[in-house]
Length: 436
Image: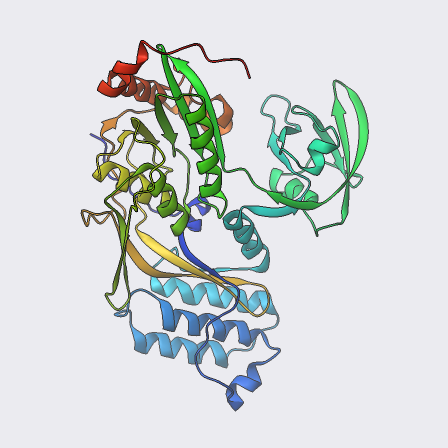
């Protein structure tokens, strides 16, 4: 039996959560006071900003307010040698809430989260990997319409040096950070292609990160529109709409929506995408700290009513679970895979005065049935396990997914579509997919 997941710790991948808001400024109580004036230009400023935000926004009103007030006095009585000491004290204080999703983000972490949720960053537009066989920093692909693509960068090119610094001992994150930078500045890459080295100087630009990839596939004489959604960024709905429109023009007869490994993202992106698949019915509702609820429903704007299968796994979390839960409970889609992660809370993210940030759990969300998915996840309609080897391969090489011989979950999804009464009626009319 597919048991509910047990989370002894929360991987950083899932801390992006279902984000309700990404605020540009902190919402603090009160105005000018002598005590507040004394905090200015001090590490204590950020400490107090964090305390105030939690006090105002945290979803559990029954958390021990007296202890939290005592925590503020304790934090402000301390002397901090620098901001890092203040950051450490903040993180220790937040642990008292027992909520891994209410967390402090240093400036670098906050910038990374902002880039992920906005779907944009300042860089040159390349996807990187550490090649398992060569252990070399390798370009998976240049992003379309990016400086890298314009300069002729190709898939498989190896990055030998960044601004003259060899990459042989670099971690992937370190290399990515060196390539990113301020808009309009330049980065010098030394590349190697088929044992020949060459150098490119690229000017950083604003890059829209692709979160949706798709293709039309002929499976058992059925034209299947396969869509992979990696994250619910601010551009995800727009990219999903483009994918459905293009696949519809190619006469797709059924769809597979792959949410495996999708850790979540923006709440409203999940709602907007659900409306592309659902013509009517409730999608999700949220409950805030005062018990107030907000209901979100489909609005008769579905783009297709063709059969749909959704792939999920234990790494499908938060906004992925909102979408999968709505599609399952409305009987709009068949869910295939393994039980999802089980994260049923929504965070609001605020920037702080020194460029750091704070994510605060502000509400809980529920599918239409009212099921509490926290730590339980969503059970698929058809449970299909992956072997450890299949899972390792799909995580290490996402572009190798969805091949029936090596991906049993994808194969199960195809079986569902092939057996659907609607697709059975249209399969005989299927025509070959043109080379594009």
